[in-house]
Structure formats: structure tokens, C-alpha cells
Image (cartoon, rainbow, N blue to C red; front, top):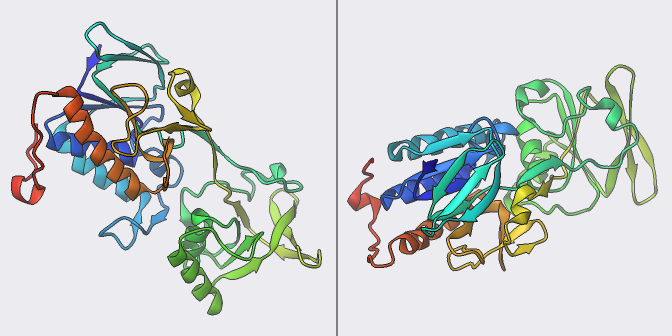
Amino acid sequence: MIETDILIIGAGPCGLFTVFEAGLLKLHCHLIDSLPQPGGQLSEIYPKKPIYDIPGFPIVMAGDLVKNLMQQAEPFKPGFTLGERAEKIEKMDDGRWKLTTNKGTEHAAPIIAIAAGLGCFEPRKPEILHLLNFEDKGVDYIIKDPEKYRNMNVVISGGGDSALDWAIFLADVAKSVTLVHRRMHFRGHLDSVHKVNDLAAIGKIKLVLNAEVTELNGADKLESLEITDFKDEHKSIQEVDYFIPLFGLSPKLGPLKHWNLNLHKESIAVDPKDYSTNMPGIYAIGDINDYPGKLRLILCGFHEATLMVQSAYKHINPDKNLVLKYTTVSGVTAF
């Protein structure tokens, strides 16, 4: 049995940063993830995606952020159980939690921190004629390597942060970038919206608003698509090498649904004071939790991890006083 102070479910950015914050308090962490490597979605789905809202980094690639978080956590010697899914939990006689994975690996800890991101997920696919015929033949739901689109004609569909961020990034990579959105206004960060509008003004991005892609065409691969304008139902044909519909991911909690946690849709309800759940000793941070005012941003997950670890320390050491020490004064002492 693997024993630790904090057992973290999910080795994405929030889980990795928890290792650092816990290490400052001399708490050891072990991480479980169903993926074969740390990093969560950042490593598995879009390692080359640019991220613009990490403090101190005007722009950082998702894969590089993971690399930096691993380097930051390394002094505290975290353990990893990768390629295995957290399956079931039970309370042990000594008050600790016992967690067993789908492969039978057993873990024990007084604290479980669920940082599982969106849980099990798959891309949301729009209802477009012939869409499925061109999967891996010009239709991509996830961008792993932007170099694939160099000097290509690309059409992106969507109105959220992913669609905006990739349109901005690919404007300097692709031959042409067209961004199609079914509404007149985007729902992403205002700064990204301004950047897209600025790039459209100088002709680096073609904006098609109040419209949607309705049909794909081609022989062995995607060659063109049809765009329908909502105002007058006008249909136009545009030649394209790649069509990238970015409508988010459909989250599923998986086995976590059966852990008697208070749930809100596909999220875990927590106390925003310390992100504790209704089960003492179990916390949830990052995209998987829900509370009034919740924002699903990596930087908010980092904040949640910091407060969660403070609460976890008091749970483990109820008779000890915890004094906040700034790292600029105390430094970072490895285990």
C-alpha cells in the first residue's frame, strides 16, 4: 500500500501546484492520474496551446507550463501512480482514507485532494452534415501541434477562449484563418476578443459572425465547407484544408459519482472557504469543483490549491499552530 499525507487525484496543473504548496508545509503528496504522463489536458490534448493569463508569463505554451510545474514540485519528491483511474474509497479504522485504482493499486492518506479537471471528457461535436466523414481527414477537435497547420487554410468554429486563443496563435502560422461564430459577441476573455478584432481589422483573421458551418465536402479529404448566414440564410462555399470546431469538452465524473459527494451537475460542490467537500478530509480544486462565483481558470485553481493545503494541514495536525511564512524569507527547503 502506498502511504502519503495528501493523495491527489489528477496530475494536471492544479494537482502539480498542490505538491509545491504542500511541500512548503512539509506535507508529502502522491498523485494518481489515468493518463500515462503528468500534465492532464495540457499534456494530452494541447501541449502547444498558448496560455495568456498565467501571472508573470505574457504567453506560455501549455507543455512548457507543465514542465515548469514539474520542476517546481521536484524538490518535494512527489510520488506518481500513472495510467490508473481512481476507482473507490473507504474509511480505514485509523481515520485515513483508502483509495483503490481500477488496477488494484491501494493508497492510504488522511487527505484526498480531487484535482481531476473535467474528469473523463470528450470533445463536443456540432451537428454538421458529413462531419464524421472527415475526422482525421481535415477535421480536428483538438490542436496538439500547430505546425500541422502551417501555410494551410484553416477555419475555426466557436466563440469561447479556445477558439479565440487558437485563432490568434494560428494567424501567424496558417496561410489563412477564418473564425466562424453563431453569435455577434464572443464569450471569451475581453483581451482575447480585442486581439481577434484587431487582427481582423488588418486582415490576418477573417471573422464570420451570426453564422455557422453547415456542411463539409471533399473526396478523400476535406476540401471545402458551407457557411450559412443566419440573417438571410445565405450560403457560401469556402475552400479549406482544416476545419477545427472548438465547442469545449463534455465532462463526466466517472467513478467519483459513487463516492457520496455532494454534486452539482458534473461538478463537486465545495465550501469556498477552503474547498472542502461534505466528506471530511476530502477536498476538490480546479475545474472539477463548483461554488458561487466559480471561474474555471488555471490561476484560480492555483489559488484554491493554496487555501486547500492550509486547511489540510490543520486537519492532519489539529494541535499545531500554522504560521504563514513567505518563501522570500523561508526559501524552499527540499525533503
